[in-house]
Amino acid sequence: MSETKKLDGSARVAATTAKQKIYFSVASALLRELGERLVGRPHIALAELIKNSYDADATKVLIRFKSDGIEVLDNGHGMTRDEFEGYWMRIGSPHKQQLRFSRGFKRPMTGSKGVGRLAVQFWQENLS
Image (cartoon, rainbow, N blue to C red; front, top):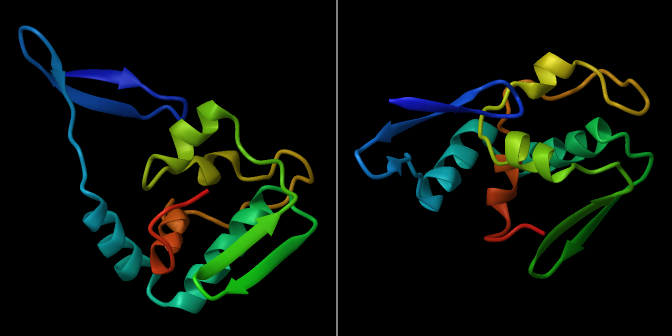
């Protein structure tokens, strides 16, 4: 076994064969199941998305209810590519526990379990 260090200090474990590394993968159906079980209800899912805006130092959040979904738009600082890959794309990332305060307004971070991103599974098949 070998491991690759990530931005958040975690390691990604891979089995190494003579020729290549083999990584675990997860089907999208599992992410949907986790979203439904860990987030629980649509109104909690919406609150999770708004909390992400707060953690990104947003001062404005716009929620649009559309016939084909819900949009949550904000003016928060967003994420760098490294943050996106290391935090958003890693389910269960403890980075909000480690950072504790937002980078701009020094707000206490609201997330702690790293599962809020699963909230989008209640409404859409894609995220932009």
